[in-house]
Length: 256
Image (cartoon, rainbow, N blue to C red):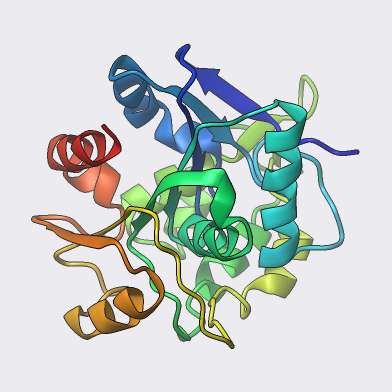
């Protein structure tokens, strides 16, 4: 059995799993995890399959990733469970809440709703595929190459966290790019049937995010019956990084 890699922060009988987004990893959330742990939680920063230090697989879907998390919970004998999911991780968290509501105490969905989005990762994935590690010998080399295709420095920094040394002389990517490329048009979660999750749910989104409209609130409320909605000022899709103080204050208050 393949168990997801994780970094665990804090020591408590209250466990919180943070589910990262597409092309990310648990480590993206380390500063937030430290603060949440200080407020009385054991935080599990998981790497989803084909991401970070977790196993690679030719199979990749939201359903499979929900089962990976279920197996992780079983393996680590976790009870008293809370969950935070951002972007794709929010989709996985919502599906987990649908499939395993009895396992969760509370859930936080960050800047994603269960609706059809237009595919928009093509240029990022194409940019990553353009990296030639026969020529690229440093992070700066990789950044220089990506900058020809991706002007946003912060997006490049996020992507470059996936760099690692395969051996003394060769860089590579932690993500399974070939498989993720095939999945790029399947990143939306649309529920085909009604369900009703009655546990406390926080839906938190960026004021300037292009992922969430206020008209989506009714859709969220139709599935999550005990819903609190928070709009984060001066924040885009990376809510937790754009306005960390506000994000953490609302998150920790809700969890406690």
